[in-house]
Amino acid sequence: MTARSAPLDVLADLEGTRAWQESFYEDLHQHPELSHQEHRTAGAVAQRLRDAGYEVTDGVGGTGVVGMLRNGVGASVLLRADMDALPVEEATGLPYASTVTATDLSGAEVPVMHACGHDVHVTCLLGAAALLANHQDQWTGTLVVLFQPAEELGDGARRMVEDSLVRLVGPVDVAFAQHVLPMPSGTVGTRSGAVLSAADSMRVTVHGRGSHGSMPQASVDPVVLAAMIVVRLQTVVSREVAPTSPAVLTVGSIRAGSKSNVIDDHAVLELNVRSYDEGTRSTVLDAVRRIVTAECQASGSPSEPEFELFDRFPPTVNDPATTARVRAAFADYFGPDAQELELQSASEDFSDIPHALGVPYSYWGIGGVDAEAYRTAAAGGRVAQDIPVNHSPLFAPVLQPTLDTGTSALVVAALAWLA
Ligand code: ZN
Ligand code: ZN
Image (cartoon, rainbow, N blue to C red; front, top):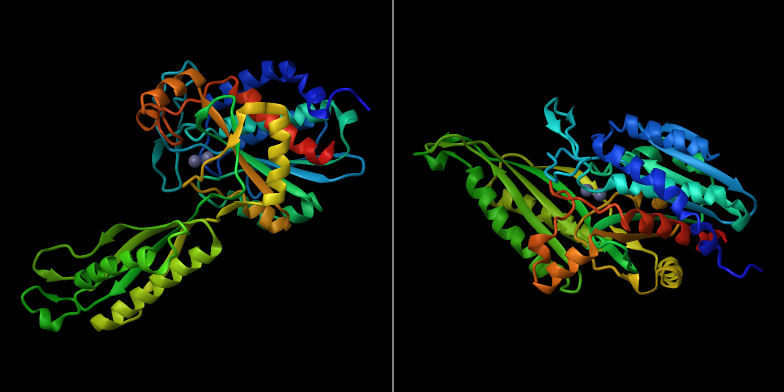
């Protein structure tokens, strides 16, 4: 028996990784890459993993990288980070701010910024991978470190799964991921059950019959039809979903017609649904289809409506037993900095990976905001106004203790299974 716990022994070396992690992070922040274009990032990740002694497979699902470290008999733990940045023009004024532009999927030249903190995730996971590789005497089992592309598009994890990820990593017992959030730096937040919402966007095309604006009797007016649909859709969340199950249904766009005296022959609506469990998700999406179809029938629409789902993210629902074990390990290591994470309205595609592997998972948040600045904002009731959130051009996690915390959290959770 050693006098100290395994996490304490492994993390005694944190100072050694901190030096390269900070410069690695600043470099990554200065060189953000859009979804599915993470070539430079993936190259740097693969190199670091090879240097640390990992078996590395790159090009998984495009730019995904998987590192494996087999260290005897025991559990297999998967740790995941996302790598992509956003088409946002950085306004932080940081010395290592991005001035990068890139060509997006539509061919447009756009500014690029790590506005969601995925550079933090990559840096922390590389640090944890190095620490665990340097201290293989403290644990046994298999460590899988996974760096995925295109979280922001919601299809990066799925593309890795479709590229035989399950065969590549073999049997896994548990999967973990984390996100830097607008909470005080140094804190880590866990939550059991639903933690992030599912998101679904739907494009609905309804058909009418075009006519002169002065002769409505010859038309089936798609503008009136679309208006009825929008009003009726307001009853889905209020009348069909239990008040204990949070859900949002927003019609964000309607397009029909081009001139005041012309009745168009179709209308296109785009809507977005957020939910926290698969049951509510299908209740809402089924209700949308039912209502649109019935309103089309009520209007005498000449052909069936069309539905197209896009930008879909699964719900993130933390396994209670897994999360309890992570939470206990965090409480041991972080003390009062280990907190309860609030339910988040954002969405993630991480859970596509544990779903494909058929394993439980836990997803937690780490703080990225200077603790003093956070306290001041909270004392003045100005957190929402003064603290930039993810995707803001001002989003700027403080380097420390953010990187140390994210690195330690991954090590502590992994060792709760491997030590
Ligand atoms: Zn994001
Ligand atoms: Zn993100």
